[in-house]
Length: 247
Image 1 (tube, rainbow, N blue to C red):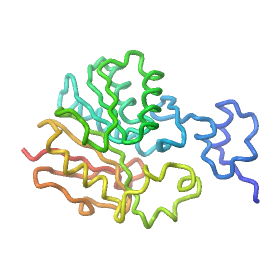
Image 2: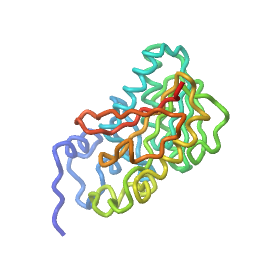
Image 3: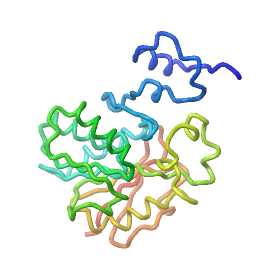
């Protein structure tokens, strides 16, 4: 077996969390699972193999949400983070709103009890006063109360099934497949949520989706009551869908 070569990022990450020397027996396991930590928007999130490791690209979803709060002058936004995993999207948004002294109501949901437990733990660590915070075990919006949300965040599984074998071993062999595999075209879960969106989005609301870089707006089944635009990530790749009601 060839000895693993660690990148400068991996070495720095390991040192930061107490590993003076890289472990010798972790194969291709992501260093974030080794340490149990990942940094996302300058916050220290706990992670484990029950949740996807947050990616740098996803930080823009939080920024887009903050911009929406500002442009729509939302004084107390109602927010849902669907498929929350570690809670990185919803909790990062909540943290930023608290710093701005903007009150909010936040639902974090996941179909995985283990993931939801991780999100709870991160909320307790990262939010100084986790008020108006609700955790919901739910398959997308199936178990949600009838709330009209001003912001819906969704980083759902979006990788086409046929593309899973080509992923790096550190991803396909260690991260939860249920958080990666989006079905034959990668759109199965996003399409299901898009169908639910019109019943849960406020008139000023926006739903923000992360998508695969091989997908376009035409990949998805958009209900006639919704309007959709695409947004690029920090690398200039089309990565996000912005969805709102047609008024």
